[in-house]
Length: 152
Image (cartoon, rainbow, N blue to C red; front, side, top):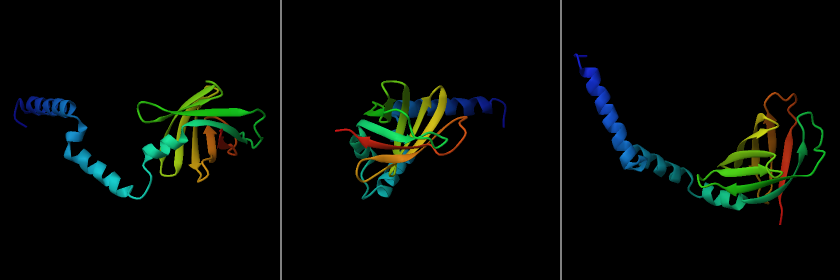
């Protein structure tokens, strides 16, 4: 590369970055094509936004600990829609907080529980309940399950 060429490439890259930032990602043909692709793939399925709206509410929770023992106490999880479009989850008035996203017929959740990172993968059932497994970092055992039933 000729002397000073690297500086020119850097200036062009910086100008491109500023243009993209000011114009917004939707101005990029690749982004428009990706959005069209997603819409085509989701044809006939309810949109994630509509599915999220149906999930908002309070749920009573039953389940098992990682060792398979049933939960000893009554639990409640509240789901709300965040301005970002993600779902926010709040267990037992703030004992645990999390964020979730809908992927097909699954609710995929990340949260902190007892100071440890945890994940849940919950199936969105036709009756509006959710059921699945959860895993907390450093727990021994893999029998942690939950069933969520929407409260009226």
